[in-house]
Image (cartoon, rainbow, N blue to C red; front, side, top):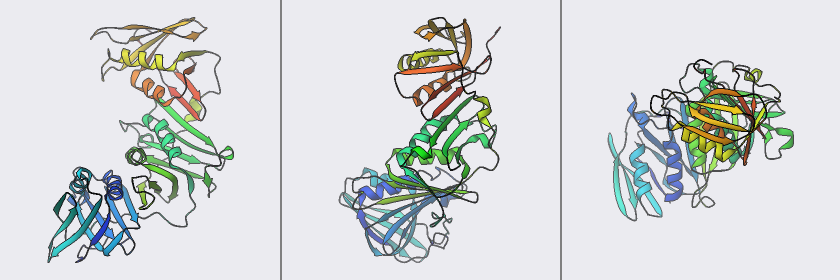
Length: 399
């Protein structure tokens, strides 16, 4: 990829289907900063090779390349243009095809965009270098799996990362593969989420390496989730080289079979050693409570209405055969919500963060949810196939 060269091209002309181009542009636009001390980062590089179009974007921490093949490259070349304007123009159009060409005169240029419902001219950046974006390293051992499995693993764990960045290591998602298991985990010390796959029992995951470990920054995870939610399909390829993680995903769109779009995302990994979080997870507990998942989730949301962002605590009160939710502080009113609960044990009151508990419940499947009491002051645990979640308690006044 010649993304590091000064943009002095006198030629750039491509014709393609709009749907594939929009898909590729939106994926790249996911990493474009809304503002930057380096204005060129708010742009996209369009690099027309002889047989494919490459669209590059970067915020210097995360780089992304979208590649569209099987389109018409009239004149190979490069052009750098505003990301948001180009994306919004093509999103709003109903034209089936797009014709883009660079009109350059000395040190000024414009990208002409011809659509069936309008013609646009966007100023092009001429004479300034676009930062290099690393390509997926061909030939490196990789983990290969369906993109929907990666989407599930990220969705089930990423909510637990340390958003306040009290720890650099905890501000990312751990991905680890040891030949027997592939797992992702995240924790901020108050909630913990782990999703683990047994490689021996899965014929959908192919592994070409003995082990892999990396901590993916939360911003990179957000970019990946946006890409996957907007059309990630087929197979996903992941590898780590040095301090960089590379992910390649095929995207779905209206003309995907005829005009395939491939996305390659590159990101720096977080340096450091992830803490031994499994030490906080006992093998099991005899004290359990069973709820209807939807009823509990609804009660948590309704109780949270009487909390604030500064004080998100709610109280779970348990007694034999029943439970009740109430808000922790009554400065803005109070609520008590009774719940059916299969619980046999002594009466217990514990404080929990409503946001964390709600995120865990949204990540679970099935009609029932079973929580284990992790011991005094150690929170509650729930386990499903492949998933484990721990929610730590909040201290109660006079408790």
